[in-house]
Length: 513
Image (cartoon, rainbow, N blue to C red; front, side, top):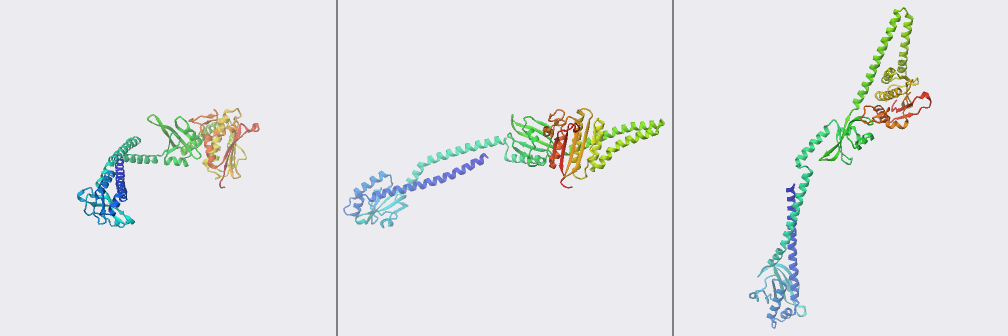
């Protein structure tokens, strides 16, 4: 780059020097032309020359020659030639040339005009002006030729050349110094890498960034986005950060493996400040998509809960079967039948109610499983008689997310309250929306805390955010489903003692029947 800059500077300076030299030469010749023309005019109108040429017989040619020589030496021109109409010289710097024929073009001057030309005469090439001398009656009686040899013009040019060369040398020195400083600055900014190295580095980095299966966002110290790879664009459409994620980015501390819930995804976020030579140069944010993993975990938790419930039911069934067998062996078959049918009716009642009123099999199975889980923990789960849900109104996974998380939170709240501990669930699908109402016997959730409770990390027990904790994901996932479907979530304050600690109501619009 330095050599290229110096070459460009040399070409520019040489071009400028050539143009300046040509302009200087032109100006010098123009100045010489003006000078000889002015001297010729002055000599042509002088009385000595005009009177002498008007009467050649009585003219004092020696006096004219003396006058002309004085003018020549005073003005610095190389020659002044006075001639009559026959082009015979009366004056010349070389006395031997006096009386000879003038060499050059004079026709236009004798016709009353003037001649300005460069011509090779007895003194060599010269810039000359030939003007007419007018006598009585304005008649042309002779002519005056004044000239400066090109050697003199070249001499004037050479006299100015040192200034030109000094300016050229100064300009080249400044260009070289500026080019060297610019090259040094570029090398410092590129850490000494050549253009080919920079190209390879950019190609490798670009290929690596866009092939990563993790979302990567790089921000400058001012918080402006500088780099976004393909996965990050997929996870964050429009590269817009949700409020909760923006709070992490604005924080002054690093964040490792923090779970954040967006409108449609569950992301594991890492935020680390990047430093170079002790100064902060930006922030690196990585995003991992755990949406499917969280869904699988929720499904696994549901299956695990159902398995625990079945295990508990199996244990209870074994106890009850043992009682039935013992009663039969004791000779009381009537009481054994009564005991067995009573237990069967109690278990079948909830199943019949849920299956009859909830046509969606996933939600029905969830309610049955949650009922068994709640009973095992000492909480009675009651499905309201007005429950009625048709199949296919909304995606089953979204309904399971909403109902399951609301019931889990309600059971936890009921366990923190006094006995009797109960949870009521009402699900209806009418009026173009599915409504889920969950009421518990706990202390309830004030409506003003709902927005905070829907953030990942909210602890109902501690009533505060606990970033990085293992809890607080349930209501955040409910809020994700609500936002995705354009629904609403609200808390209804209790009116009577029978309303428990409060009711959480979720409404999800149904796009198609």
